[in-house]
Image (cartoon, rainbow, N blue to C red; front, side):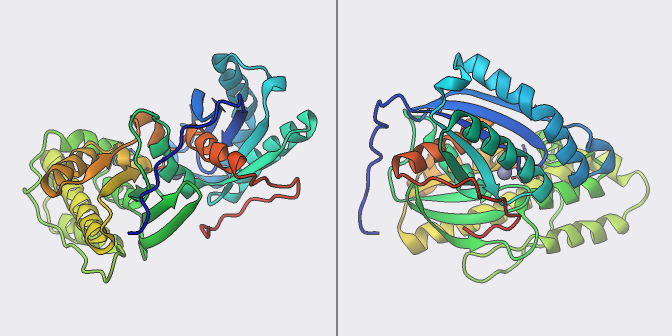
Amino acid sequence: MTNNLSLSSPQSSGITILAIESSCDDTSAAVCRDGIILSNIIANQTVHEKYGGVVPELASRAHIQNIVPTVQTALTSANVKLEDIDAVAFTQSPGLIGSLLVGVQFAKSVALALDKPLIAVHHMQAHVLANLIDADNRPDFPFLCLTVSGGHTQIVLVKSPLELDVIGETIDDAAGEAFDKCAKLLGLPYPGGPLVDKHAKEGNPSAFKFAEPQMAELNFSFSGLKTSVLYFLQKQEAGFIEANLKDLCASIQYTIINILLKKLNKAVLQTGVKRVCIAGGVSANSGLRNGLQTMGKKYGWQTFIPAFQYCTDNAAMIAITAHYKYQAGQFAGLDASPSARAEW
Ligand code: KG4
Ligand code: ZN
């Protein structure tokens, strides 16, 4: 790696940004001033639980109901008035198109009414930059980030807040999807990831062995794991899952984390970058958080993990990304439109 950039402290210019995140099933609004998060409000949608996954149409409707009170609460708890806002940021992509549309249109309306600029933010970049929220504990550049969410799994080389290269990604399911699909096979409700984490804490991670894919380079594949768990469970007798739930969760979690951390180690060896972060919903997983720290101690990495509330979807990460885009003068027009696709 060539240069070893240090993150300059945000200038104290009093720039206040309202950020909105509505890419999937959580409606979130945050306020930041000069890169410091003043509030981060998240309205979760429980309507999807009974369907075993997010129902896009229901998500869009819930965003419409939630967005005004969520933004109002974010402003109140930041002690900021709407007229104090200098820019309005929103998640532009990727995500569910109907959900994104609610956030984009709301942001445009506020920006138009206040005559303030708009900032369009990429959700995956925002997950990575969640690692820059804590001014007392954030990585210098360049750093590596393993971004693991419900829809994506990527290894990203971050050269600066606005220069990010995806150097590895999944060719099929995302890590969060693997957690959720395996959890479903175990009869756990959606989203299963946090429940697998909870049961795994009391289980034996080497009780059962599941296949690990052999993927080239820095790419991942998780669809084989789900199939391997399915075939294994089909061979068992009735009552097996209930009797072995904790060990099954611990073994599945161990397999997923092992796949992730092995590739991360490969990325460190390939790039020579030893500042390593994790991000995205699955970075809330206690096994992954502990595993990263253990790897860090073993191999001499400097490791960073966002605070728990900045791992799963939240608008604070949109706000911190918008802060850097504001400084770089990267604004969007009123013709900005959302995109479901992940291209950066
Ligand atoms: O980043 P995120 O909130 O939304 C997307 O952008 O997709 O990630 C959601 C994913 C879900 O698959 C959820 O099951 C998983 O993150 N997740 C977890 C944990 N908390 C959330 N997976 C494993 N362990 C957890 N503690
Ligand atoms: Zn996300």
